[in-house]
Image (tube, rainbow, N blue to C red; front, side):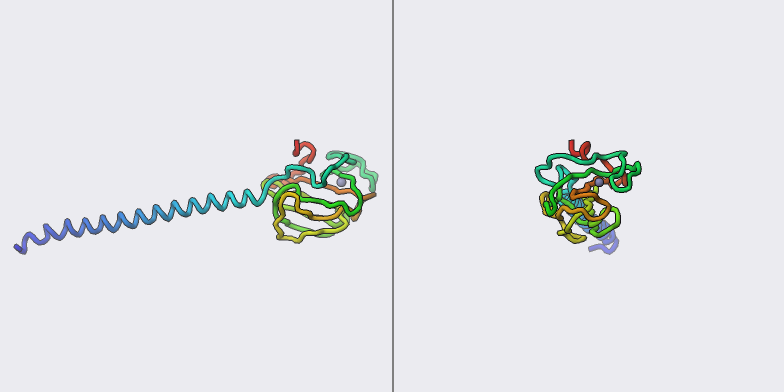
Length: 182
Ligand SMILES: [Zn+2]
């Protein structure tokens, strides 16, 4: 082979190799991006499945609501105050169920709510007050119908009932559960 024609052959061979390797890398990256996107969608769907907004009342076969959402005269303090939830009267120890799937964010005891539970759903959180007993722990996953507590009259309460709140996550606003469930 003539020494002068050597670069004429090696340069195209070299360029072909570079294009081939680059092509393989781009192809592999595209596959990785596609796999990542698929995994992300799957995860999003799983989270959505895990947390849904309330679809029903947290007590089965409720007869009535003893105090609606909105301004009212507080039964204990006798002062005008905004009722941030609804009161569902029920017998002591009636089972309170989760109205949809979610994750228990907080449980505790306060002067106002007595024994309470806060559940994180999809776009909302729900709070349960005046419980006799709490059956779940923070971090616990709950499904629709999971028993979470028993009705009582702890905290600022005049009788056995469940105080139930729905809170919008983006605005921290309380929602009227009767309107929300319609
Ligand atoms: Zn109440």
